[in-house]
Length: 90
Image (cartoon, rainbow, N blue to C red; front, side, top):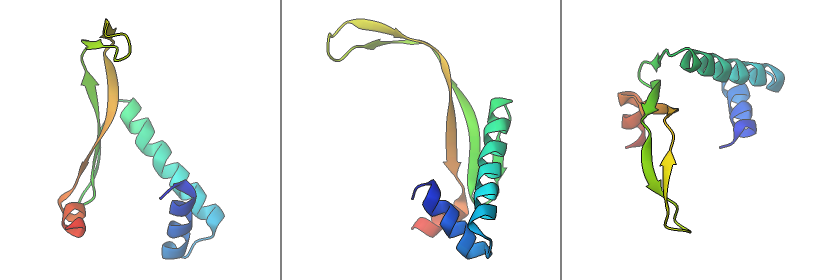
C-alpha cells in the first residue's frame, strides 16, 4: 500500500473527503516525525511503538572492492508492533 492508497482507505473508512484524509495522514506522519526528531517515542497502544535507535560507528567491507570502510554512527527509526497488531496478522 502506498500513500495514495492509504489516503483512499482512510477516506473510505472514516467517511471523509480525500482532501481531508490527505491532511489527516500528513498530520499523523508529521507528528510522529517531529516526536522522533526530538527524541521522544510514540506508543500507540495495541498498534505499536515508534522509537529512535542510535547505531554506533563500525567497520564494514565494500563488497565491490573488498576494502574496509568506516560506517558512521547514526540514528534510525524503529517500529515494534503491538500485541493486537501481531494477533491480527496470525
